[in-house]
Amino acid sequence: MRELSLQNCRLDGRYDIRETLGQGSYAEIYVARDTVAAPHAPHGLVVIKALNVFLQNDLDADLERTLVENFQNEAIALDRVRHPNIISRLGHGTARDLNNTIFHYLVLEYLPGGDLAKACREKNLNLKQALFYLEQVCAGLGHAHKNGIIHRDIKPQNLLLTHDRQTVKIADFGVARVAQSDAPITRVGTNVFAPPEHSPMLSGDTGTLTFKELTPAADIYSLAKSAYVLITGESPRFFANQSITELPFALRGEPWANDLIKVLNKATQNDSRRRHQTVVEFWQDLSSIKAFAEAPNGEQLVETPARPHALPQAHVAVGYTPLAPQRPRFNTSRELKLNNLLEEKRAPLVVPITTANVNQIPPKQPPQIAETETSQDPVIIYKPAKRKNAVLRRLAVFAVFIGIFAGILYATHNYLRGRDILPSITNPFSTQEAIALTDINLRSESNRNSEQIGLVTKDSKLKILGSEGNWYKVSIVEQGTFRPGSDSAKQGWISGKSGNGDDTIKIQR
Picture (cartoon, rainbow, N blue to C red):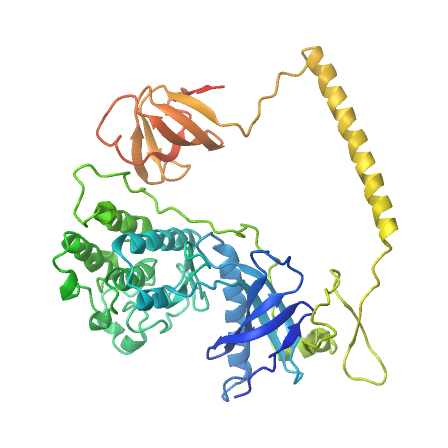
């Protein structure tokens, strides 16, 4: 066992390692300060997840390749399912520690609010708080499934909170799998939360399962066990590899207890085909008890407040962006040497933090590496910054050029408008309203094969939120007439054309 030597060091000339957060079988987790970030930037503190293939003594070439591939796949999976309620990857790299050990690392966002397991231990969540967090987890997990990724290790310890504890994000995609993969199902997860399909406890007993295919229902099983913890405050250890059949004694008298048991029991069936098949289906059943959470004394209101969303809604924290960084490409140590004898040396060397560099802001351009005859290590040489006056002159010339070009475009536009050659241009980003000319099905996605989640009746007033071809994403402002199915979802997608090619809505400009 050989740990990386990174304490009190600056990684890649940018990340100051502050402390160790934890250690797994083949990875070490650190919290670091990004010296390039502004003082109050949302990602001033980041997490460094370093792959250390030397943590175990049984390392061989095949095992190392598997670990490196899994590490790279984790980064790819995170980018593929980027979502406000899934932890974001901010970067990656390859470096050498103080002992000259080469390692790969991922830069992840830091979530200092702790995990939901800790939140349950410190203070039991009430039903409203638990459902608030569960809706966000459903939103993130449903997005992952939509993009073909099965997490396989959903549990409260992997549900992390932001500093204000208002946003929860799914973390640790290290064992995630692509749905419909032909690869053998490996035994992963935590016994209490893992479904029979890949539970470590049932590694020799899965032959008794009538259906062993890995589907998104595996995550729904783990999500239901996690919901049990959040709502009851207790571990489901008595239901390990079994369906949940009852709540703790103290909660059995609650008015929502029977409804909750029905949902959790269905979601934790041993046969995955008998569970909820989508996260949306699970959330719609679970949100049926939301009315109890809104009641002041835990009793269901006669007049319920707002109807729960048909689709789980995401919660966006400050600093989130849907744009992913450059895709990583990691090699094994043997590949580094075979591809280029100098490739291993090109990995930047970690340097200790000293009083001379603690406040030093590194240059933005990547370092150049030069070989010397007297040293085996590369010498990092930074290009000097260009003179400030030259930069200002270039910026001024660029601004003048943009101003002239914009003026020409504006004058041309006015000339053509004056001769009625160009029609008037409306703001495409302004909110448009429309009237339904007939009854229209409200769907979850912009295609006729997607799930029908409601009905827009004739003469309904609509607000157009976006469009894709002949499909419009709308919010129902006022239903025209009441029909069965119209009192359901208030937002979704509708087709702008009927089967006969006629318009289904009239847009008011």
